[in-house]
Length: 229
Image (cartoon, rainbow, N blue to C red; front, side, top):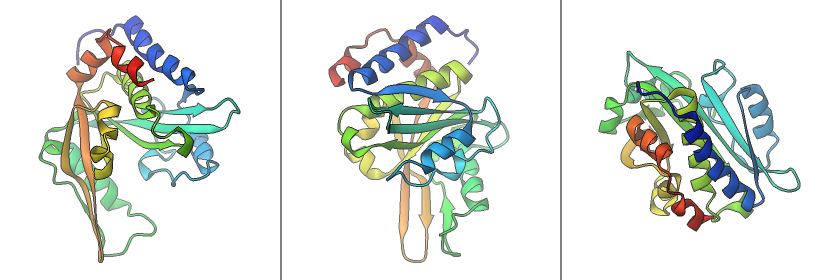
C-alpha cells in the first residue's frame, strides 16, 4: 500500500470506537510491551492461556495489544495483533510452520496442523494477524466484537498499512454472527486444522485486504456503530 496515510482520519475512526466503549463503561488502552501483556493475561480469571503467536518474542514495533477495564479497573476485554512480513512464503505455509515447529505442550505426538484454505496461499506481504481475543462474560452479547475489531483495524492501519488483516476463528463464531460484528469481509474453511488421534479441530480463516481496510478506515458513516452501541 503506497498511498499516504490520513492520520487525522485514522484518529477520528478510532475515536468512534473509543467513545462507544466508554458508553458501555469500558476504558480502552493499547500497549507494545508483550511481557506486560502476558502478565495481564495470566492474572485474568477465565481467560485461556495466550496463544504462542503472542508471546514476548515479538520485536518492538511488530505488535500491539489492547486492554479494556471497567469502572472498578477490572479487566473486561483483551486482544492482540502482530505483524508478519511474508515475502518468501504465503500465510498457509507460515501457519503450518508456526504450529508444526512448536506444538502445544498438551498435544498428542500424532497431532498435525494443516492449512488448506485456498485463499491463504494468496496472502503474502505485510500481514497483520489478529487474535487472543477475550471478553468477560458480563460483557458478551453487548457489541464488544465490533468495537474490538474497529480498534484492531484502526491501529493496524496506522502502524503498518498492511496488505492483509487476518484471523482464525471457530465455526460457531461465524454461525453466531460474531465474525460479522468484527467486520471481516471474507471467510473460508480450512484456515487451520488440527488432526489428532481422536479429534479434528478446525478454524476458519477470516480476512480483509489492505484496500478494504483503507476503505473501512476512510468511511465517515458511523451509523452502523452507533446502532450497535
